[in-house]
Length: 91
Image 1 (cartoon, rainbow, N blue to C red):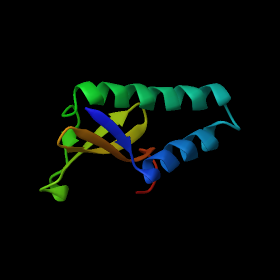
Image 2: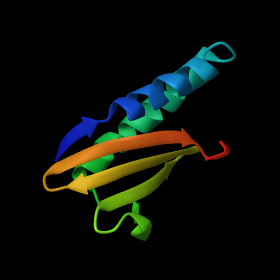
Image 3: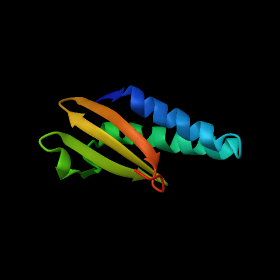
Image 4: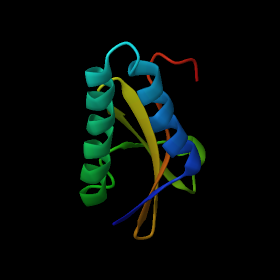
């Protein structure tokens, strides 16, 4: 499956790193690496996350990685990383 990141998802990952890095650079790195590892795993098992019926007929799914919610869409042979945020963020 081909991985594709939206610009918003890239921005989300950068925002998370920028938030954590001043306080704990190692934690910032671990958070980013955990998300990237999960995304690579999703490329092999794209239906691992829970499907979100409110987006039907699109196949948008949710996966929680550590304390981060990852939203992604399976579209043909492509996996689009849509958004990413901390589960305690007001979304």
